[in-house]
Image 1 (cartoon, rainbow, N blue to C red):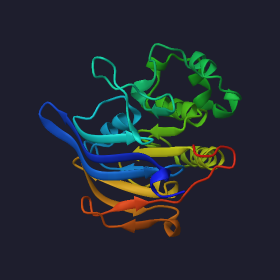
Image 2: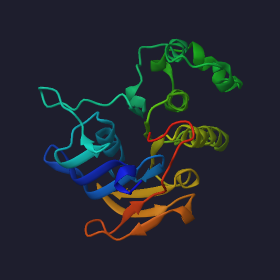
Image 3: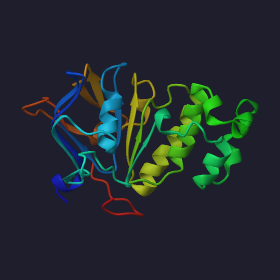
Length: 247
C-alpha cells in the first residue's frame, strides 16, 4: 500500500471566507487513515471552520478538499452533501428541544447508567437539553461520540469542560475505537494539554494558518518532511484494522 492510498483527506489551497474576511487559509495538508489528529489553536484560529469543512457541513470558498480521493458532492444549489461515513460532534449539532433520555435511546446507547453513576450527573438524564449547562452538553456530546461508529470522527472543543478523570475515561474509549475499528479521529481544542496524550499528530493553527505540526504520543512512528508550501507535511503510520480493512 503506497502513501497515496493511505490518504483519507487532502487539502490544497483551501480557503474559507466570511464577509470578505479570510478565516482559513491552508496551502497543503494531508490526513491518513486510522490516525488520531489533534487540531490546536485559540479562539478564532479556524479550528471549527476546518472541522465543518472536513465534515461536509460547510463548503470551501476556494481551493481543493478531497475526502477519500474525491471532492464532496453538491446539490443543485451548490450546497455540500456530507457523507454518512463522517460524523461531527459539537454542541451546535445537538437538538436542544430533545430530552436527554430520548436522545440516548434514539442513538441506541446501551448501559447508559455507567455514564451517570455519580450524583452530579444522575439528574441529567431527566432534563431537556436546552436546560443543560455547557459542561453537561459537552459530556452528553462525548457519550454520543464514543458510542458512534463512523469511518471518520470529528470532535470540536474536546474535553474543555471535563475534569481529569472524565477526560481520561473518554480518552481510553477513543483510543480503543481507533485501535479496534481503525476510525480516523480529529479532535480540536484551544491548547494541547489533553490532545498531546491521545493524538499521534498535532496540527497548530494561528489566525487561519498552520503555524506548526508536531508529533504527539507516537513520536517515533511519525516522519516529517518539508514541503514547498506549509514547509511541513505529515507522513503517518499505515493502519490496517484487524476488524475492518481499508476503512
